[in-house]
Image (cartoon, rainbow, N blue to C red; front, top):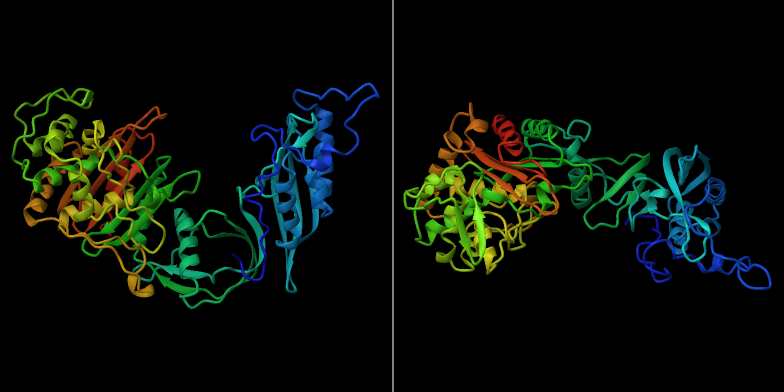
Length: 542
């Protein structure tokens, strides 16, 4: 919470709503205003259907006028969720310290009315102008029949979401000057997708970085770990320097690569240390899916599955792993990619480099229900909820699932959930044999205890590296990895997701001392979108 400012609490006032859904929830004051009855013969019929143009104009004008003059209670009566509206509108002056409010409606489009807001934010003798555009929609109240503003926090400001508040005061955390591993300054202007990450770093490390707080008008987000979004700076604080593990060159390559594909994310790590070299997202919602995504990783999971087969003595890279057209496990039939020719005498290396699903499914009856889970947790450090990267992150989930999911998990479907961060770490562990928990900020700064795992036996590492190198040189990843020199390896993947017309594209790979993983939603096969992203980052060399 912002220092020196008390935020209005609006996120949990649902008790007075009527009807739950639709527009039936209407405030008691308006419902009893004495104008609901008609003639002495009985109440007037409740209006229905969309509001007329005249009703849209009248309701929006009354709402905007009451808001502009600072009468939150009156303005709220023109909405369909009065209690929520009044809390946020009251905070507009009391907590955000906005005065001189002028609201100018635009030309209505059907039931929607655009408008512009101009105001002054003042706090402790400091003032600055504040202007923005927003929009409201007028709807018909189901129980009252009145034309009402459809209440949403975004009416007050387009960036407000449920539970968010506008507050002015001393910033919750002093500003930071984040720098990369070589002291290059990292800014959102140059590296746009770092915005949410720099906000999170400021929130956690601002006080420790040695800076002093400024005075700001900001959105205080209800979502835990989201930090504050600054809208107006009244007085700048003194930033403290925060060194990250990022590489400016790798970050620039990651930003450029994800910009080519919608809903894409990538992470690069340094296998010898676990340091995160780059993290980039290209998403409309600003979500840090690179660290927090929870998605089926598809065939990139076969790195862990192959390690499970090897470590449990089931087969080896040169041992048998036949690749039939289909494989059935507990009444569920699994297929390979269209056009993949069967290989009855294939080795595990053959099936891995071709990304044959049925070869892995065929071994489902030889692994225990928890074999894959134990491998993921004990050797790759996944799924224990103990990673401390420096900001919020997901540690992966590889549950011990019985039934058809035992087989599906082996090919990265079923109940398995991973993020690009997790998969980059998996690749780093596979190439070094040592699990080094990824970090974005040195643990020495805040003395946090990072996660550990026992890693992989040398023989397993040698086999995994051979299979991943074969995949990169002559297997499914060869097209994308062409031209990369040095020690290289890769694994492609695609994952079917309900309600998506196209599968998610996954790709992970390494080159010398950099490992990277990417995912694009609705991206097709691994080489279609995620592969080019990873290859672009690997070319920087970290």
